[in-house]
Structure formats: structure tokens, C-alpha cells
Image 1 (spheres, rainbow, N blue to C red):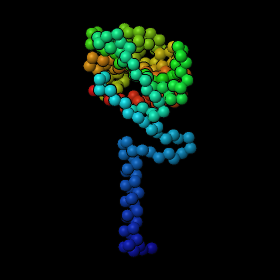
Image 2: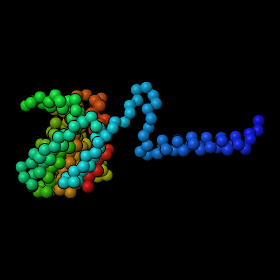
Image 3: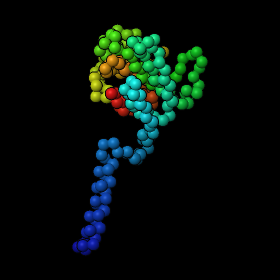
Image 4: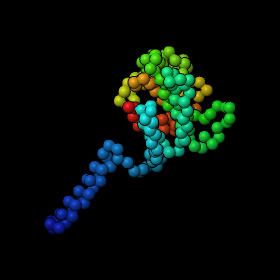
Length: 196
């Protein structure tokens, strides 16, 4: 069977469109369509940016953020950012334990000038004394060295700690079981962090 020049051109055009679509869908950062049963669509995200503490991240839109300063002076700054699912935030008991959450805590480190590892091992706020294993796993956040560990208290928690400039950043998530979706949300947030 011999193809006419018009059919050859049409075939080439169809193949070019298919090739271009394949390239667009497989390039880094491209949204992937949901194809199979049980697959989930990537969550819609919001942006958080705080120039005072030099941090930016994305988080799923179903979370609400609360912030507060906890430290007692400029030398001992402690700023807390808490993300709770909106449906859980509506039912937080007064003077009781809150729901599982993602937290970003920023501690002033201008006086002690500790490394992240020293801070983890020497500060009760790190929850490292509750660690499942005392060994710290090396990782990175925003291209900077960090340490990861799991601890167990009222809830089980994962924390990632890094030092940048005069601040220690502690990213944590609490959960009831290891398959909890909040852990995936935490990974999404952690992967988007930019620290300046």
C-alpha cells in the first residue's frame, strides 16, 4: 500500500502532536493526569511567605495557619507556625490537646550559636529525648543540611531540624498512624520550603 503525499503529511502532523503532548506531560513540574483507579489528584496549594524569618513554603489549601510568638525576648525568639486541617481546627477543645498538626518552629540561635545537631541533643523543645532511635538521619531542606528523627509522645511525630543564619528551624508533623495522609502533606510542604 502506497501512501499519498497528503496522507504522509497528515501522519507526520499527528505524530508531531502526540510527541509534543508526551514531552509536555513528562517534563519536570508537569501536572500528571489521573489515569487509574485509586490514584489521587495533587492537592491545590496555598503559599506562605515570612520575610522576617526568611521562609517560604506551599501547603495544601485544606489547612488553616495560626502563628504566634512564644519567645520572651529578641535574644530568645521563638515563632510558631501551626497548620491544622480546617475540619479539625473547628473542633479544637479549649484547654485540651489539639488535633494532629504540622508545625514550623523558628528559634533564635544568636546567643548559643548551636549547630542543628547540638540544638537537637541539648534542647528539650526538639523532643529528641522521646526519639524512637537516638541516631539522627541526615537530610536536607532548601538545599541545606538538616537532621530527621521520629519521636513518640501523646502522638507519634517526625521532625526535621536545620540551622540557617541565626535561626534554628524545626519542621514537625504529628500523627496517629504511619499511613496518615498528614504525613504526605508534610512531605509536600517540606519539599517546597525555601529558606533565605
